[in-house]
Image 1 (cartoon, one colour):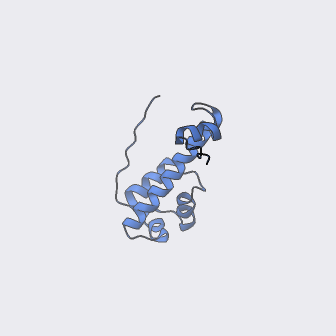
Image 2 (cartoon, helix red, strand yellow; image 1 turned 90 degrees about the vertical axis):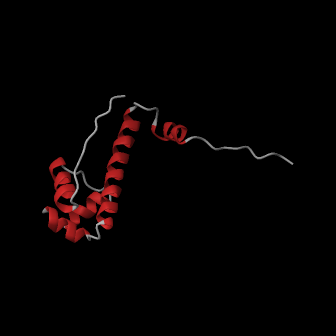
Image 3 (cartoon, helix red, strand yellow; image 1 turned 135 degrees about the vertical axis):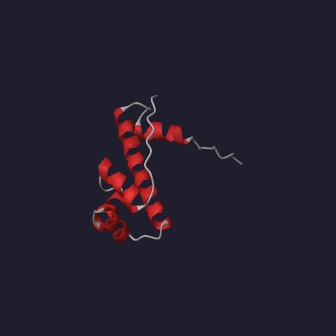
Length: 102
């Protein structure tokens, strides 16, 4: 009986094979898109925790339900001023930034 070969790899190895090594143009594009995706998911979770619909959140921060939906589904870039209004006016939070260098 042949022993099955374990073909597991790390997530980092998977990213390297799919998008190139860290620092490559394709990998950087993936990383940026992933950050936008995470932001959309985070905003959606916060909105739901506050018990707000997309329409209610949009009204509170002066935008449209369609725009909130596009942000949550990673289909739209978001301006910093709009992000601040969503977090502060719509969700009642504070926006903090951190800059990191590699």
